[in-house]
Image 1: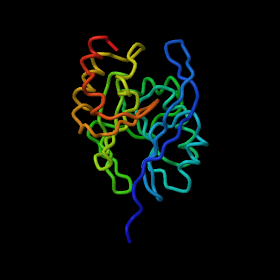
Image 2: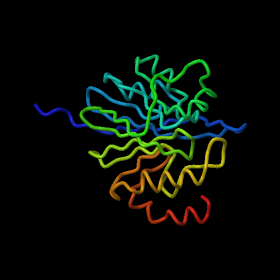
Image 3: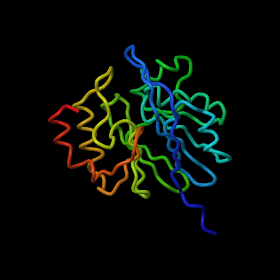
Length: 212
């Protein structure tokens, strides 16, 4: 019997992002990758109930945080408590995590080169610092997809104007870790529309020139 195919599900949740004394309204992409039986959630943003509904009756293998900004992790503890799933975060972003969840640590560290498997599909962890020190992307070569968090968007890199961020570092991460992926790779972002590596790669020097 052929196993159910792996698929990517998507929902948009709304809430706020707070850092450096400011608060902004934001819409976040929440990604789920799996099949009819098991799934990972990438970035549990804002609404644990809506994310749990999207998971449905599937086994939630883990809650992957692409980075520690509060709009990407605010619903993670509630979702973990509801499902028993572990929260995964790169240790270099624990300083950001603790700003939102001082009494609840992540369960497992993410490291560059780690491979997570769901429904027979491999997700490779790419450490892509710049937007934050512990930012990661998740590359699924079998799906020709990378989940970029806030490292790369349609039209340029993620913001680097706040604490714990660095424009030169994010440019290096994008150049070395993302733009080296096949050009047809779909970039599923933390906010807004998806793009492809091939669509973004020609604009790298423009971003550098304008200090985007």
